[in-house]
Length: 120
Image (tube, rainbow, N blue to C red; front, top):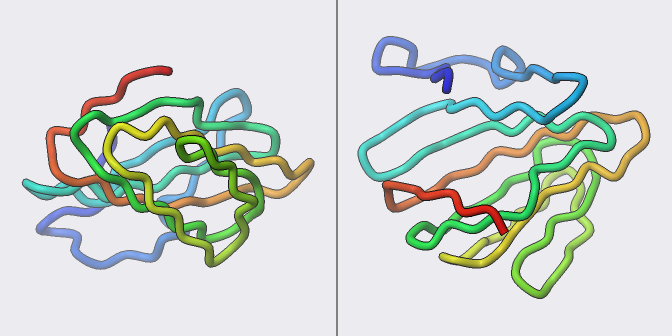
């Protein structure tokens, strides 16, 4: 996975990291530390990050732009720009861009590491 930030690149604008693909959402690592991953998810209209879980890691999602749904455990939240969602360890979760034409940008932090992804 591409890592955008580094010890040599400690400052950049989020727009530099945004990139959208036609067929599937794009995930980029913004920063990688020993105890945390800090990623951007670029989810085009109609795309989703499929349902999955992280047995040993919590996740915090921050929706920078767009609208959609966030599944977290038994709950489904309508999300919009500025919303935050806490995803506890092992909770199945997914992000869906339900808009017909607008992109969605979500920033997330995962901790502790290693962060194992398990499809649900």
